[in-house]
Length: 424
Image (tube, rainbow, N blue to C red):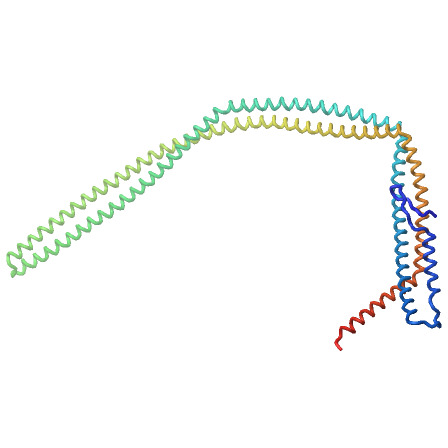
């Protein structure tokens, strides 16, 4: 068997030969024959020497097993790489073989696809150009239409705004005159209330004067009928009667004057109220006429504006349809370019494969070489696996002894540490 294995890059790396591994296993099997027999006398020196020998043999056995396992693992990894490369090469060869077997069919089919795609590209470009021209023409018409509509409806908008301003002014005047009427009505109520209060006060003054006059007349009558009153007292009381009669006449005159004055104030307030109501009727009529005129002009403007807006919207929808059609034409062109590129790439590949048969032959030779290398590597892996298994079986006793001695040494060390750690 060879002492080297081929790596992924084609180079070779050395591995231990099967004969060396078998020699290690034979030495491990014969190591037990050198152990003294059960009945043979042994000295402490020979026992220590035998223990150290067992440790060395166990350590050598473990190292040999690890080395054999690594060689086996490396060989299996190399086998996996060889299989992967062979499968990849086989895939390339199968593809080239399939293309070559259908070369004439592929050339005919892809050439036709390229021609169809180019015709489709040209048609999409022409359609997009035509739609772009139509869109530009419609956009120009739209701008012109907007300008014409603005010129046509501007007077109606101005008239609507002016009549609305007059209507707003009339509404403000109406609100003001309504407040004035309300104030005038309140003034009438206040004047009537004040009239009643002043007349009532004047009448109470008359009543008070009459009461005082009766009292003075009664006292005068008492003095005259008694016969004991002096003339001066009677004269004084008669003077009081004259005075109270004058006060009564003055109070009665005040009632007449107050009544006339308050009635005049009430009449004036009512006249002012009537005047304000007349003004209110006039302003209401003017406000209603201004509002009707404003509403009529607003409705006329809105009718013209909505009609113009509908025409513009219809034209904008036509422009939107052109934009959508242009996008669709561009998408069709891009798809046709993609199909052309794919067909051209497949055609170029077919021409390249057809023009380079030596590459196909090299792939075939490479597969043959790879299969031979793969077969050799599989044999190498199998041999390494068997050698590793034999080595493990042959060195099992030495490895177990090494492990047992190592455990015993650890136990002794632990006991010594424990012994010297406890106080005596």
